[in-house]
Image 1 (cartoon, rainbow, N blue to C red):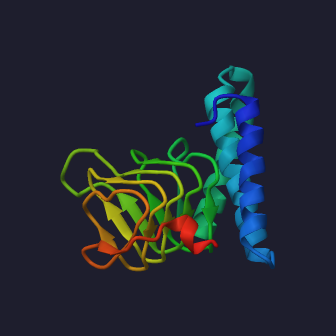
Image 2: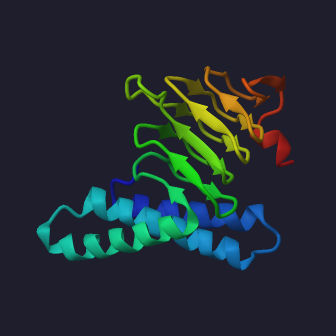
Image 3: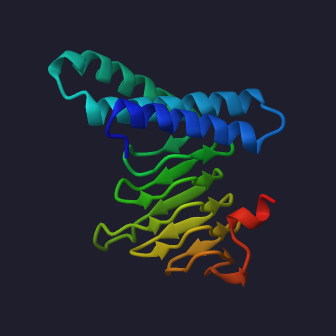
Length: 185
């Protein structure tokens, strides 16, 4: 995750480019979400890199602002769980457990939950690079999702899957051999 000012600047640049590349028409909603993502990264930067007590008031203010925006948009995104390239498609409820590890270029729709099994250990999903999670998907448990995977709308994913595939259903199963990058062509 973000460990320096250079990392922070790179994350912001990559995420802005990702949004601009993904959408021909940049709506007010997308602009608001991009501002939220930038705030998310700023909170992460200050938490990870600014340890001195001098920054405590700034961190407190940023966390207050972040919490307020998170509630407004319905996002629960713990810091240090998502690598660079985050793209949130729309506002609406998104829950990600703080024990998840999510790779680069993660694209997520609202009404999704990524978390642990209830009553079990704290093991949460590990998600690779270039994963696209459709609206309403549920991903949970001690599982691993490979790179370049598309998870279809309303899927329930409770077992591990390899890379370069599309999965969907409840429970999820492989529906074709197309990955995230294949859909962007």
